[in-house]
Every structure is written in structure tokens, then in C-alpha cells.
Length: 427
Image 1: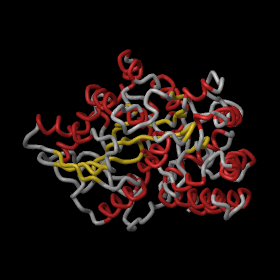
Image 2: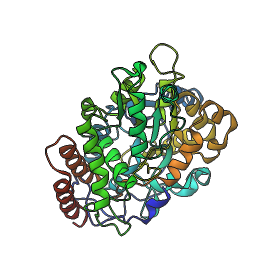
Image 3: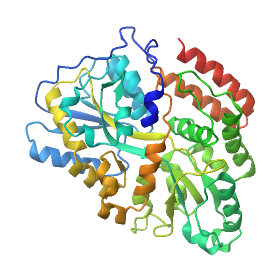
């Protein structure tokens, strides 16, 4: 996340649920010792490939096996379980699969261990934008494992039938294309577009993308909230109006990643905003997808041109309370290797952090979205990198959800959000 480094990291605040014993420096480095079995705490593996990756490690390390501790699918629930585990100073989680926006909070609260950069020999071969997500106060606390940039999935078969020859670059172009497609008999019962609008972390992502794609921001480069602006209003109003007019189906207010993916795969949507992992699943020919071979991907559209993705992805961090940390760092380096990342891309279509894989000819033939995805990641905007991220994202979700569901007008929602963020970020 190249732009992320310019956002101030506010170490004066304590993390959500702080036990009062945190310091701004995070957990110190140097205690990466101990060998033996470890655990990996990860959200539900919707790709179906994580255990295969772990089996490769376990086969080569019979005395240092890793056991998967699978957490819920929902990112907020994952974070909450990790926070509770850390507050209890439990050693039941060794390696944490963390959303890229959790680093500041977990490091400031000393819940994860600082990693000396010389312990990660391939760090310089990873996309610089992803490495920034793993740092707090310029120190490394995790290793980037997968990245993510939002992509626009679209039914190129139906667009072609409707005489639309290229993917839309703006919101207006997307809606104009929908008007033509939905007039086709083949599109009967379909809706135009969806993202993820349930009140959870995905809504923070979709709201952020709408605001950024309209030229706005949530937190400025000076680290101060700046969401009560005409640009942010334009982004939020776009989503609100799309719900009102039916461009976005009413059911989408309940959609997370998987619900929206299934709607697209079931042929209910012309356009879908989602992450790269959807590509492999939507192209399955086992009968689970009705759109296999019938869709393509493009960069997200914006207000007047190309849109701006939120930077997503996951980093692997070592719990401060874990045993066998020497095994943990070796396991992390194994999973971050070019070989393992390539194997994972081939099976899941998840975005790698290893830079050279985006130029791999074989992978580009298999996954033609890699080139636009690399650009999406490099140009992505981060969600606010603040210590009290849990509280900040909850405030964003509440404001956006109330506006999308018609409870609060966009003007009032953004004004209230500005006030709330000022209280959270300046404490």
C-alpha cells in the first residue's frame, strides 16, 4: 500500500477493548525461539485450498506440524476472537491470519510480535504496497501473504448481445450498459449491480471505494478525519440512489462476499464488485456456477473515470503469547515463498504478494485479470490505519448502513460520522 505510509499512525490511542497495558511500541522483537507444533488461526477457508498448503508443510516437518484453527467467515467475528484470545494471553493461537487493517491495533496493544526484517529473506521480492500493510511505526509485525484489490466482474456475454463492446469505466456507463442488457430476454429477472452492503467490514470497503472513487477520502494524509465533504457525499449518494432506483437489488443490503458471489454465479447480476478469489469459483464447470465462461473482469468504475479500490489482503503475524515462535517464522516464510504463493494462486485465484507472479506468463494465461489487478493494488487506497480500527470501522459501517437503509440522509450521516471519527482518532 504505497499511499498508506502517508497516513498518520496514531499511537496515542488504545485499541478497541484495550486492557490498559498497551504501549505505542508494540511487542518487542528478539524472542523468536522455540520449536514444535503450532496453530494457524484463520477465517473460514472458502477457497478449499488452505489445508493443502498446510499439508505440504506438515509432510516436511513431522515434528513441527501446524494445526488449522478455523474461525468464522465474517471478518469482524474473526478479529473479535483474536482480540479475546490476546486479552486472555492465551497460547492457543500461534500464527494469526490478519486483515491488513488490523496491524496497528494489534501491534500497539502488544498482541503480536515484532519481526526483524532479516528474518524474512524474501521481503524485498514482495509488492511494496503489501509490505506497508504489515508495518507499524516503520517496524515489521507481519508478513504479507495474500493481497486484494476490488475487481468488477461482468457478464461479457450479455453485454455483447446488447451491443456493449467494452467494460464501463464510470458509474454512469455501467448503468447505461445495464439498461441495454436488462432489456434482453436472456436477462429476465436479473439486477444490475451489487457489492457487499451488510453491516460488517465489507461495507467499510464498499463505502470507502465509493468515496475514494468520487475524489473523496475518509481520513486525510494528515491523519485527520475528512469525510464530511462534497466528494464523500457524491460517493455515498451514488450507493443510496442505486438502492432507491433498483440498480442495486434490495437483497444486497444483506450481502457479504459469499452472498454476492453466489448471486452472480446464479445469474442474478450483470455486474459484481468482489475480490479476485471469485474468479476461480465462478469459472468452475462442475455445475456450481451458471456463468462459467460467460464473464470477464475489469477495474472498478468511478464517478468520472476509473475507480479506486480499497486495499485488501491478509498478513501472517505471530501471537505475542505463542510457543514455538522459531517454528512459526519458518512456517510463515514457507507460506510466503514464491512456490507456495504460485500454488495457491493456481488453485484459488487469490492475489499473491510476490511481485514476479503478476508477470508470470502461465498465470496470466490462466488468470487474465492479473495485470489489471496489479494496477488495482498499486493504486489502491487504504482503509484508515489507526490504532482504534475496530471502533472506527464500526462507526463507518453504522453511518453507511443507516444511509443505505433509508434511516439517515447522506448529509446527516457524513456529518455525524465526521464527529464520531474525530472523537475516536484524536483521543
